[in-house]
Image (cartoon, rainbow, N blue to C red):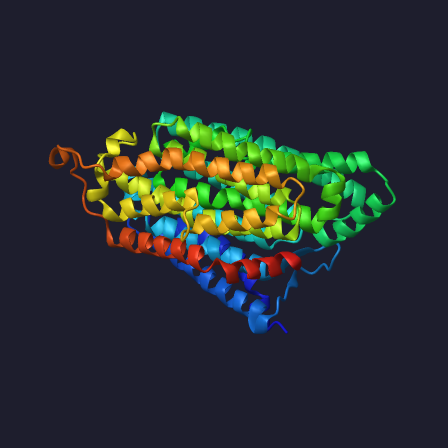
Length: 501
């Protein structure tokens, strides 16, 4: 049985972050009060998520429940649905968001004008609320509403840093995101016309009937293609990822960490829920969308790494690496099995912990080099900011799949899941090729930052890392090793969550 306190946690988590977004503009504009409030509220959500996860998995069981919102029952009302997968994702998202903020306090103070920091905190709160809503929602229209909130807030945290380059990147991001949102909206309207429902489970029942009777197969296929394409654009799946490096390369370090580690994951989680809960994996196979996703995932793994190899800017290199890592996730989804989806979810968690660490580390090394972002300008910065250097090394090892690091665990789970799939040769070849390509651009970057510069005493005048930076990087590093060494219980938990999705 679920106690009433745990039963209300999904709604309470979203509501708390929305309240924080409303209250933040009323706080003093100067000082750290808005940022501290955001951190406190995110920490509270993280604690609530941890308790919900404990309740849902107590005694080795995997429980799930629906939370009805408003006075209207299904199929007209809105619902939230919580299971082990949703609980663990909300916990990871909260922790990663908190660490991304606290680890970049200093760079945020430098990059964002004092009058805009309050706005930045409002946007962060809205982003957190939208991520939680996309994780918990069981209603497709509610998902669309929070997709739009997520889009506006994400574009705005890019534009919050003043400058023409940032404005262009934010505008390009907004245009691409709106194209994706439009496709999603058309697909939802088409699905509603076909099924007469907006709640995911009710839609699933109606779609199963349509497929069994072979009715309206073409509109059903079009709806799946539109919603997949729209969310793929917003998830930066290759070849729809050209906006991502510009957005990351020109935004503040905290924005880059949040965008890559968290914002993309909200849309990917939505795709997974639509595939599993709305259409069903059997229908996805009948409509051949699993093959399309599988091919695009492989293309992203290879092309993202190829583009990263060509970059001279460290943040753009890490951004293109994110495109490759998104490909890993879609490869798992494209396997169209419970094991594949579970491996994809594990990689979502790994990437949500590792990629913010990499952007935070890159920001620390860049600050040590006088705010220069070119790779060669970072020579010797490891010895100026050891915490940032360790973060870059650990993140690089994880992305390359070195045993003992988080990335190895998720890559191994994807490899094992591919044995259940008919295209095992292509999956294993893509995993191997991408890992080699990852090494080709991460290893030189690590070598550069660890190579002592002869004129280091003249070149580097950066202040030492702050306490919040050290603490955040320490937690990031601990999470990286924990996920690498103790991933088996987590993967079992995720698999149980996928089974009740």
